[in-house]
Amino acid sequence: MALVQYPAPAQPKNSWIRYFSYRVMRKNQNNLVAVVGATGSGKTWAALSVGEQLSKKNKCDFNVKQVVFDLRELMALINSGKLKKGSCIVFDEPQVSISNREFQSQANKVFNYLLSTFRHLNYTLFFCTPYEDLLDKSTRKLFHAKFLMQSINSKTKTSVVRPYTISYNSKFGKFYEKFLRVRYKPANKSIYISAPLKTWTISKPSDELIKAYEKKKRAFTTVLNLQIEQDLNKFKNKETGKFEKKPPTDKQAKALLLRFEGNNVEEIAKKMGVVKRTAYDYLQYAKKKGWTPENYFLHYNTQLNNKSLRK
Image (cartoon, rainbow, N blue to C red; front, top):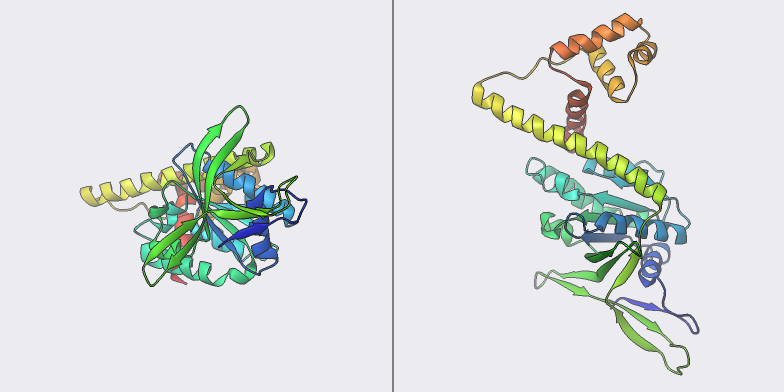
């Protein structure tokens, strides 16, 4: 039974923050949390807010760099060595990269290995997904908690979740969900009581974090839409017998990536050590082959994903 105890005269406050912090900072464990709710239910904001609160208690930084959208980005962050003990990570839309059938066998193997072995790092990892069963069952076995989104109050700028601790019984093949219990001594009472924490009202994250998250989410959505378009074009090419476009040269590819990063032609020329006209030609010749900064970045990112999964 998961229990948070408050010595008298302390009264219950942010018990889940206290519970998560105790696990990573005192018990040398991690926290894997599924935040489940339909689109627009406030699940990501809830995870961001809890991440901010927990990081503050654990005396760790928490910013948009700790919000990831795909498996490769998650692994790069964990392996970067930049996160301290007690740090939080929010994995938004994990079902996109984990449940995608093209990555199912390799990605799930890598992901489950990662979750099974990074306990000693003492991180808290939030998974924000519309349905938990979109994730592989072997992944869900490793969860420690689940937050079900209940409602949003736009006036108070808060959301309400129904939080559970999770355990998996391999003998019976069943998941067990229980409420976190809080033990405390009420004011003007002589004995301690124990009560289940059935709901948790969570305030919205900071405005600065919301702004940074929304910007990063738009970039992710853009790349995702390009991926869908690319997949549709591949299907169409197979149907019509058309060939894939000719790849850009190394210099054309570099120019495309620099343009995607927001550099103008003059800045590209300077960074590549060429005159402005040459940089312009790189982009134009690549365009004639069918490459734009956006679709080449998607192609480049896909190649990196495939290489990391093969390692």
